[in-house]
Length: 291
Image (cartoon, rainbow, N blue to C red; front, side, top):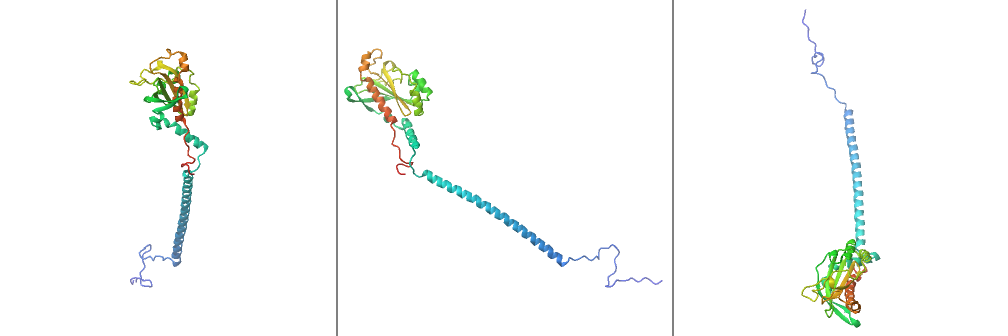
């Protein structure tokens, strides 16, 4: 039997066993499908670009609004500051507040010589002007220890802050006069205290004696009379006695009534009170007298 002759398919390539992939021809993409993919990719990129532009526009809009609000706030603040700081006429309430604050700080803002002047005029017998001389100024004292007990309870209740005291003698050095300035919170507290102070000329501020002077025997037993006068947030107490040590009980009532002792004490305390409570010159405007 003649041998089988192998058959070669047209084109010169031999046939491969069934299932072999070595000679399988791969399918090529159609040109149209590549163009569609490129167009889809471009469309996607365009969409992302448009979305990014929208977000950017929204961000810029929000930032613009924030900056506009901030600028408006700064502008309004600047306008308000200019209006607040520019000079303008004081209101009645501001004028009253200015005066009250000026009076209230005098007890510590003024030097000692302004609170208790070295020399004070007063009217003696026949209304002749005479001068009292300051002997000394006592250290600042707690209110309740510088006055008698009935007065101390009132000052404590009304919140007395401190007590300033000085002692004077009349022109002839016959009388010793201690003046005490009680500093209260404000004028309202002073009015409340004044309404409750005892009506008794035997109690009030305690005398201050200065050793080595004509006042060295001036004590509580030597007090002839006491009194007080109010001004602003201050109650100005006064007490007077003889420099020779005479006690109240040893002086006849007629002599007490006819003496110039008490008028001199009242005049000295009154001058100190008027100076402390005198209304200040209030400027017309917030920055002086020019509006």
